[in-house]
Image 1 (tube, rainbow, N blue to C red):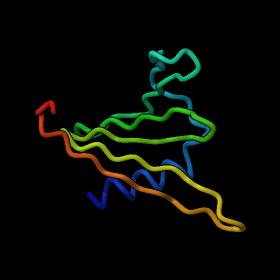
Image 2: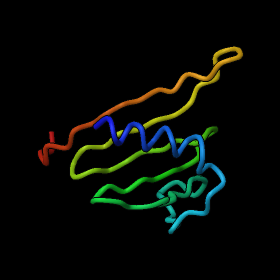
Image 3: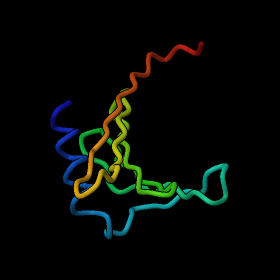
Image 4: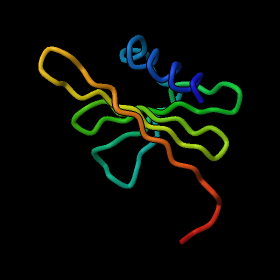
Length: 88
């Protein structure tokens, strides 16, 4: 899991201007989903909703990361969701 978080941090720092592998239209016409790359079964995506939001899908575990400005610094927020395959 720490490798994925490190990877996400590197993505935020270095791939903001990289071209995605593919771009998909979502059910919201204003938001396009970009597939940045896939490695070892993990897909890394980006979309823009007033800011760049990056997330990964690694075999049922989804992690998101976004930056929030806080004065002169930027706070990186991380969230993890586990997919159990059950619908509630």
